[in-house]
Length: 104
Ligand SMILES: [Zn+2]
Image (cartoon, rainbow, N blue to C red; front, side, top):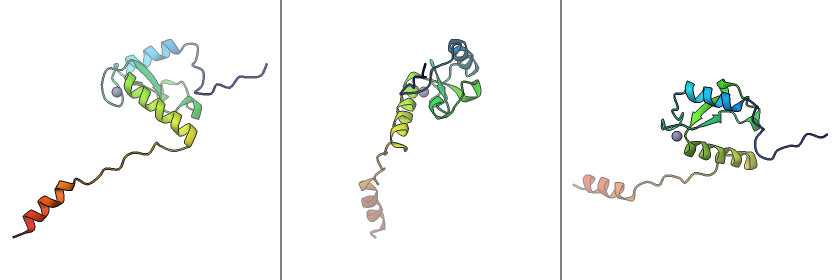
């Protein structure tokens, strides 16, 4: 019987529930990104990129950051790069204030 390939991610191990609990306890249910209350366990290196299910590759994350990270990883898998971030624009008021100060 041929192995079925899953489109997104790799299947979780059978004892994932216990691993997950252990990682949440280790990280004291603190989100590794925002420090908020973590309810999810994330693969630091995604399983789809060769990351293991070992606790050293796992971190506790809150739901929001887990979704955001998973979304980025999905994007990278498809396009091979980070989604484009909006560039910070210089504040237009900054120059006017500088000119006013220089004008003596
Ligand atoms: Zn978070």
